[in-house]
Amino acid sequence: MLFAGIGLSLYFKSANLEWEFSERLIGGFFLGATVWFRLEPFIFIPVLGFAILIAEYKRLFNIDFWKGNGTFALGIILPILVFIIFNKYVYDSFLGPRFEVNSSVAWDISIKLKQLFVLAFFGYWKLGFFGYMPILLWVIFDRTFSKTALSLREKIIILLLVIYIPLLSFSVSTEAFVSWGPRYLSLCIFPGLFLLDDWYRIKSEKGFSKINIAVLAIFVSFSVAATLKGLSMIRASYKQIKVMSGEFEKYNTDYIVTGSEIISGHFGRLSLSIPCFYIKTFRDGEIISDRLLKEKTNKKIGFVVSKYKTKDITQEMDGEEDILFKILKYITPHVIQYPDITNKESEQLLDAFSRKSKLLESKETRFYTIYIFATEQ
Image 1 (cartoon, one colour):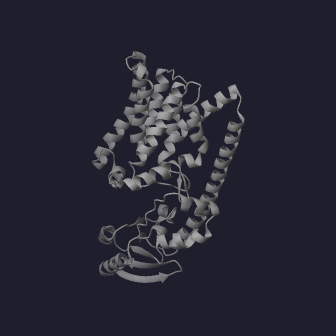
Image 2: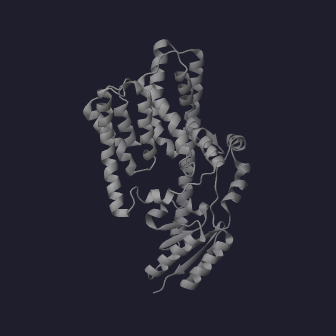
Image 3: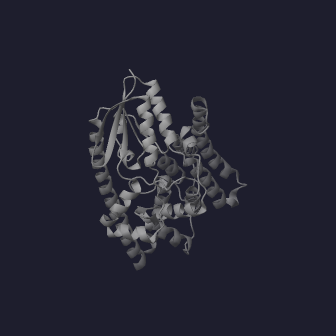
């Protein structure tokens, strides 16, 4: 977000996009460098370029248009080119291992439409981009249908948001919420703030109408409340992760393997001190166990089996939800998968570990059972 914010701030610095060579080149470089951190820029950057072409179609034969945007594009291409060369050399993949792992996307149209709704608005207990910042949705409609002409910056940003959000929703495998809000749409935050700034400036010059004052107060208050709620959820999750991490550390294992989404969700900082592996299928477990048992000697491996399935725990918690969460759950689509391995697969993996290594002990707790195996001396 920092690099994207710098790059977009330099590009959208002027409402009419007046430019200087150094600012465009540096801005493009920072925006292009975002591909080193996440894959969404590979969608965001082309959409931004497309929005620029549409908004400035009358200047397509203007040499100044191509000079300014060509400089910006050059800045973008340089870090991306280095990224591609590096990944091809190190991983033999142009886009790197993250792309290879996430390249398989299920194209079920009903699921994709639900993802679009959840990412853009809300679903189940999740607040999407406009659900978290409803004022921005109001600003888009207000400026689009306003009698005041849109600036070039506003045109590009509105086109960018309208195209990027649904396109991304159909391109990713999940709605990808972390703690609070969809991380896939974090690149939209700074363009949205520019749009909000333009709207506020125009309304301030003309004088706010009563409806705009009411909308601003209500929507901003909602976003602040949502932020506070999100922070409280993050603090609670940190406490849970700390407790669970401390519990796993006391077993003194060198590795931890589990097929439970609930357990893996509490690895947290534990992963910084102990390699943790979350497996989604029996085949994943076989591969991990073979590597750990064959290549490592005199090591202890903890295989954790949850007593509860993610789906069962979610249903059990329904009675303890806030009234707001209950409303969101029942009136909106909800895209959640429960990729826990089955009980049969857990038994098969336990059998595989037992054949290839020595079972030292098993410990049962209220929520899970951990089986500790030792590799061969």
